[in-house]
Length: 323
Image 1 (cartoon, helix red, strand yellow):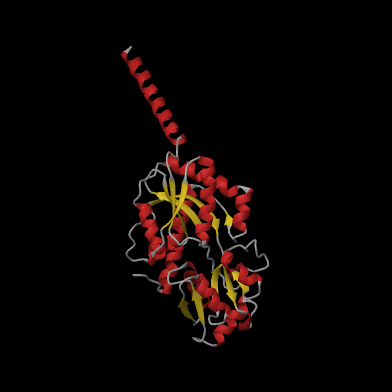
Image 2: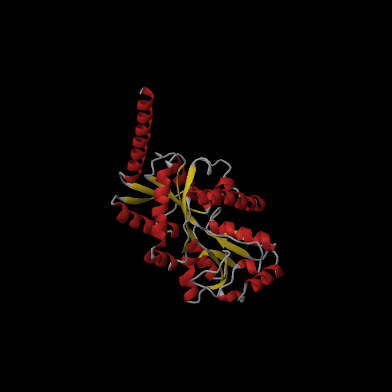
């Protein structure tokens, strides 16, 4: 009889624990959710994060704030999330720089794989190779021929050392074996202005921010950096058609502190994925030149690991380093 009692008690305790776990998960979130964007307000990654935050707030009935913590290529805000309470109420919405920084910064204040867990890949974000009409080229092949005809004469722009535009430019330069000088600017705005004026031969610019310059004819798009053509400019080829092996996606995605309970991570992932698939959200993002493409936490973790390895090789071969 005692044995039967203890068997019954064990089953009851297991059932109660399961019910408690499910109930705790169902109650998430229980307070304000803070999504840290480690870049400045108004940046494209910030705009995408705000679109997601708005929909999460509607769905959860809790305040969802976007907290911009810019600095050091995204590492300042990322460090704050790595050390935050791991209960799902503090999240990180970041870009491909999250993977690049693991190799780029020799003294990174956190470990990208150890201190974070992936929630979901959010969007694919192409850069576009642009030149001024005055340069006299209309294709990527023509640009390569021009730059190669005058070794060391031309320069290319970036939004700053260690930025995604710098990284994309170095990847292109190395694969195409170009003798060209890198000129870092303080941001995309300045880089676009000087490229438009012809002071920089070319710039790998974020598509969404460059569209006004392309549409009014101030810049000519020669190629996109991603493996697939951009829906907003289907007539523009991918750079891999001209320089095989060059693929750069300045993706955006959501992370959480590493010890966040798995059920909470999965719940957030499902909800963000649902939001990204909503027709109005997908269109709003597409209008910015980005493509929604959510996945699972496990898939995103594997993707991050692969990106650290792939992009880290480029950092080392180009000799890019930030002390």
